Image (cartoon, rainbow, N blue to C red):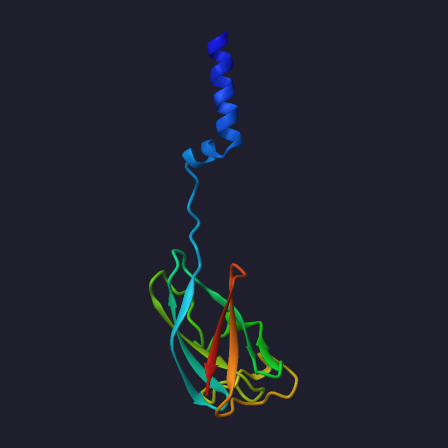
Length: 151
């Protein structure tokens, strides 16, 4: 009887201190992590980002925001439905994804503008030389990654 009480006490203590949790196997869901390796401005309304997936899970990008230093921004919330191939379907772990980020409400296509799927806030209309911009990409798991680019 004493042995049962001692074993039960040890198990309660181990559980309460978290020791039991570290001994149990938990499923790995992966971690999203991303770094920018390079960027290039293709025009006054388009920038190409080379993004490396440094996490252990595949990353799918759903939307992005581009902000200038005054707080003006462009947002594109329907990026995942882009049929023009303007973003990768998924970036595998350790893979490089080439991503095109556009602003402007002109026609979509080779000019780089994102058409009616972009929403402006403020007076920011194009990338200007000598200015920095913050680009925030949002994944399908709702993680946000922020990068600063300077034209």
